[in-house]
Length: 399
Ligand SMILES: Cc1ncc(COP(=O)(O)O)c(C=O)c1O
Image 1 (cartoon, rainbow, N blue to C red):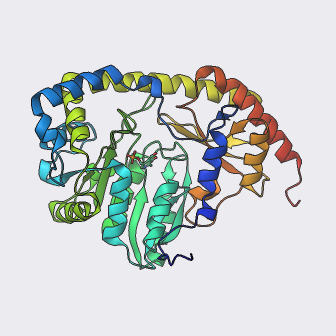
Image 2 (cartoon, protein in one colour):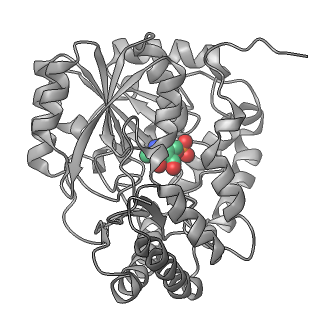
Image 3 (cartoon, rainbow, N blue to C red):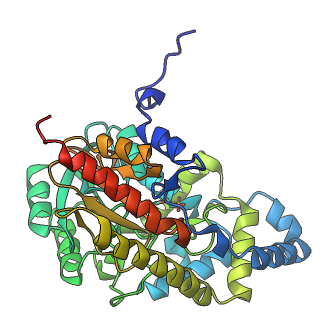
């Protein structure tokens, strides 16, 4: 049978990342490839207690259909978290989503027609690329340095692309680079969005996990004109399995988000929402975030020290002050997949850079994750990776 798919449907033959993660899941392999939180910190007992309480006190409501905008108790919890980001808003600006992945999807659906342009960091979060591509988007990548997206390149992109509909950015501890946009650039970005009248999707899953430097205001908190849509998630500070995220936008937009969500999944799992709200009421989430931050910092330091000791000269990397990832740039390598293959031969996995680029991938790049590898695997994994880099860098670039 030959199926007649729509243009939107991806071809499983092109699932390079799926193939990489499959290879990385082999128990022999030390994987720096995934993007998972450390499971040993999931607050299992606290969630169990919260779930019992919800079932005892609000069982029928928690098991019933609910509103597309989300359970009021959870939206109040979210409002408190937003205060930390400097976003002082009201419940009519907040919708609960099924993870921030759904917020990205609904945003693509809301703003993009075939051939529209999405401006993204170079590199950017790869699953956002997949989503926007499914809505027919073209990508324009904006160069970055350690201070995030370069604003002169952003303005150039806005000038040259009248069909730009969206700037998608992860300004803090970006996936995949771990880089953070400076305050000056944040202000400029918001100013440019207003000047060129382009919407901004600010994606902030990692901002709370900071071990160094000062908290910076979100783009949303700097936005005076309603151009910024903000997305947050419980995935990295609490649990990704409960699939809880949120969108913050002007009420006029939020009403549309809510209608589109309703047609996508009616609403996010009511039980998860009640349990999460109960957990946040009975526990201090900031204490929990401190534990996550301390563990990831320890792992990141171990990885950085090993990288500085073993990686060949000339290899560059980002220097995250928080989050879960770092980005590596290897000079003279034409094919990032070669790096992956050489590493896998030594039972180490990373994600080669290509899928993180909306267009024009930069070869010789890859992402490393440190949150999900126990300490005893990190140093040896980096040593093996260093040997793989030695091998790949020894091959002349024109071969
Ligand atoms: C930048 C970014 N955005 C969104 C997501 C999706 O997160 P979730 O749907 O679990 O909230 C991720 C997950 O890793 C991410 O790194």
